[in-house]
Image (cartoon, rainbow, N blue to C red; front, side, top):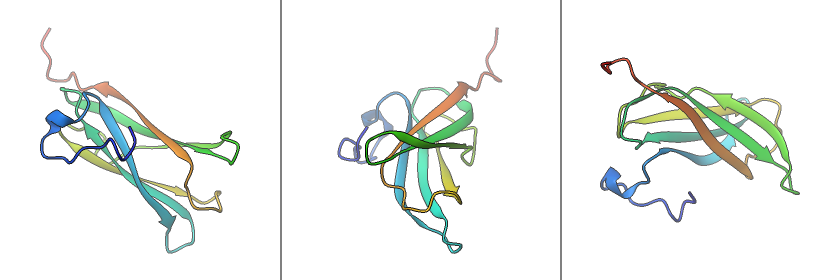
Amino acid sequence: MSIEQFPEIETFQKLPRRVIVKGGNSGRNAKGESELRGIVINNIGHPVRDIKVFLVIFDEQEIPILNRNTIPNPSLISQGGIASFVFTLEDYPKEITNYYLYASWNYDDSNWRS
């Protein structure tokens, strides 16, 4: 989902029924390390847990050169909830520009009855 397709968040009904990961602007932190911050929005219809956000960085020829993952805060979010994440890359000298983000998660079934 590109930024142009991302609707104004008046209601979550306009968002697709999935767990959405959006990256913000990348930059450098005080130590000079590359950083990418973003959010995870749960619009799947059920609470989710064990969320993990993955970052794949591509070079100029669109070849993957780096793959990292992080756990957002919080890692358990209810329907309509938002979590935030940050990738800090000590081993990547450039600004993070050409990348792909995706998430893995599990349903939070702790309150489900058999």
